[in-house]
Amino acid sequence: MRGGVAQGNFTDIAELYQDGPDPSGLVPAGLVLIYDWGCTIWSLVDFRDPAGAMWCNHQGECWPQGVNLAEWLTGTLAGALTVDTVLESRPTS
Image (cartoon, rainbow, N blue to C red; front, side, top):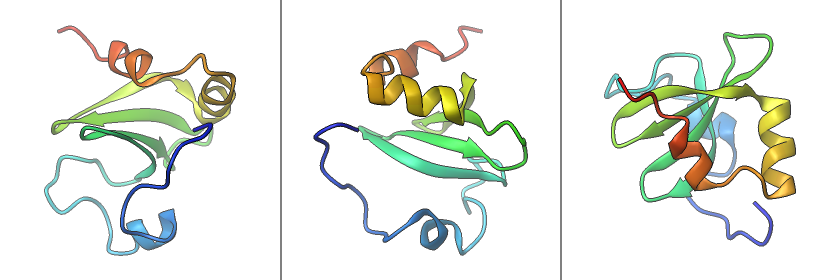
């Protein structure tokens, strides 16, 4: 986040999501991209959950990160949440 360069070819998340859920079926409906870490790693917020649970999508796999949006923002801005910690949240089984 800090010092990052804007990525993607969309203006905002509403524009990105306007056509509905991911047509490939790899991202469940209600999950909306909020950050592109690069290398096909995305953080998404779950708008179906009032707490704003965060999910990760990487190479077609989608899993909960174990944090909510407020925790994700706080951790990312503090530098405690990195692409490595996002990938470490991936279930092993």
